[in-house]
Image (cartoon, rainbow, N blue to C red; front, side):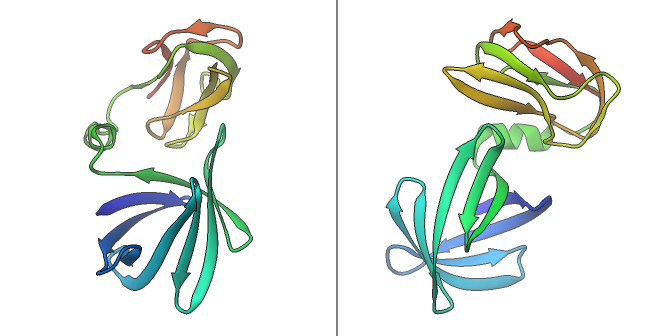
Length: 168
């Protein structure tokens, strides 16, 4: 299985091959390094990883700021693109030409607007935060560019599919 993982602002391709026994994997990063890893799920969101004679406790956390891995006493924000998912395939082949919309993925209430018209933003930078089912969700820019429209204000009620901002 191949995944694209963005960590520390850098995009890496990770390839996982199952080993001969349960929990064993061969891991390659960017097609260069390759190592054997044993991974065991201790409970949802907590893994025990064994590699190179060392053991690590890995805690996965989702928050309004995004996904974070706690590993070896450090906090590492990350984002995973699984090429098998339809959403990843669509976004990867959508291109970056022309204006792109930031749309509400679910009904909710706008809590914060993080960018204003004229701001230059990076791909995957937060643009709007909406609250749905008592959870805050940061909606991110689909590409690097300039914010040309902001159609939301704090307190606005939105439905799935509403365009909240446009990036050009």
